[in-house]
Amino acid sequence: MATRTIGIGLLGAGVVGGGVARTIFEKGKSLLYASGASIELRNVLVRDLHKSRGIDSLSDLLTTNPQDVLENPEVDVVVEVLGGQVPAKDYIFQAISNGKHVVTANKDVMAKYGPEILEAAHAKQVRVLFEATVAGGTPIIAPLQRDLSANEVIAVNGIINGTTNYILTRMARDGIDFLDALAEAQGLGYAEPDPTNDVEGIDATYKLAILASVAFQTPVFDSNVYCEGITKLTSRDFVYAAELGYTIKLIAVARKDVEGIQARVHPAFISSDTMIAKVDGVLNAIEIETDLAGRVLFHGQGAGAMPTTSSILADVIDCSRGILDGKDSSSIGFLRRNTQIRPIMDLETKYYIRMNVVERPGVLAEITRVLGDLEISIASVIQKEVDFTTLQAEIVLISNRAKESAIQQAITELAELEAVAEIGTMVRVED
Image (cartoon, rainbow, N blue to C red; front, side, top):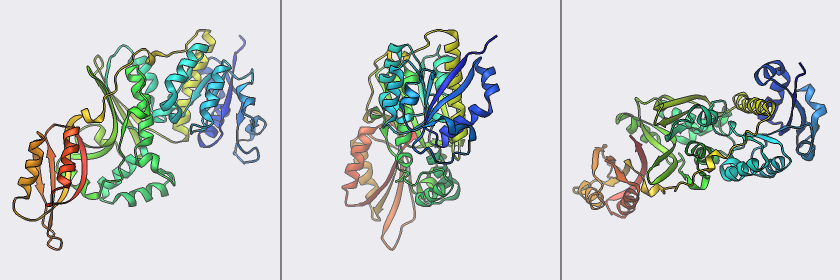
C-alpha cells in the first residue's frame, strides 16, 4: 500500500527548530509507525543560510523567504518555533489563511491571540496545536482536551517555569540570596542573560493564560492573569517558611467558582508535605483538580530542545493522523464559554508578612489594631532577636484567611506607622 507523505514547513532552526529537524531525519521510521504517514521536511525558514547547523541534510531545504514555507503547496503542516510575537503571529495567520495546519511552541502569541487564531483555524477547517507552549516535554494540553474531557475542571495549580524553580530550590536548600542563585542559573544556561520574563513571572503568566483557556473552555488572556515575580524574596523568608512547615514556590493558579475564574502567578508558601512542594530544580509540575478524576499530577521537564521537540512532534503526529482520516478536526472548544475573570483583590487566603519594627513597648498592639480594624486576624507571630545596633526587631506573622484587598490596605497603613521601619515581604499562603 502506498504511504501518504505529510509535508512539514519549519519556521525557525534554532535550538528547538534544529531539534525538530534532526529528529524528523533520524526517526523517520518511528514517526511513520506512529502517524501512518511519511513525515518529511519541505522547507526551513532561517535568517542566515550560511550558519552551520550540524545537520547535513538540512542545507538544501533552507530559505530566508517565509513564502517558500507558507505558500508551498507541498507543505501540509507549518511548525512555528521562531518565538516572540513578531513576525510569528503574522506567519501563523498566513499559514491558516493558506489552508495549512499549524503546530506552534509560541506561548507569547497563543497567550495574547490564541482565541483569535483558533477561530481563524476553525473557519478554514484546519488545526492549530500548541502542546509545547506550556510545559515543554510534559504533556498537559492534550490530556485536558481528550483524557479529562468528561470532567469539569475546578482548578489548575502548577510550577510552570523551570528557571524560577531552580532559583527558589537553591535559596531554600542552601540559604543563598536571590542574586547569587540567579547568577548560578545563568551560568548553567537555565536563565537568559536578561532573565526578566522568568523572574518577574511573565513567562508563567503566558503559560497559565493558555492552560486556563483550555481547562475552563473560555478565553483567558495574559492580561487577565495577576503577575508577581520572585525578586523581593530573601534567604530569611526561606528560613521562616521552613520553621513554619512551608517551602516557597512560584506558583501558577487558576480556579473557577460560581463567580468566575481567578488566575494568578506569584510566590507562595506551600505546605512542605504536598506533592508540588517536592518538585525541585528545573522540573515542572501541574496539578489538575476535577470533579470526576479528582486531582491528577503531571510532572516532568518543562524546557529544553529535546523535551520541547517531543511535544511538537506529538502534535505533528496527531495532525498527520487527522489529515489521513480526512476529517475536519479543527476546534474552538474553549471559545464556547465566556466566563468572568475575577481580580486578585477578591482572593481570600492566608498571608505571611515580614517587617522590621522599632523595639519599644506597644508596637505589637499597634500592628494588631491596624489588622483588627480591617478584620484580619493573626494565626501566629514570631518575633526575632533585637538588633541592638539599629534598635529594631523583626516580626513575622501569618494571618488567618483574609481578603487580598484588606491585606493590601493593611500593608499601606502599617508602613505609615512610626513604629514600623520597613515592610519586608508579603507572601500568600496556599492552603
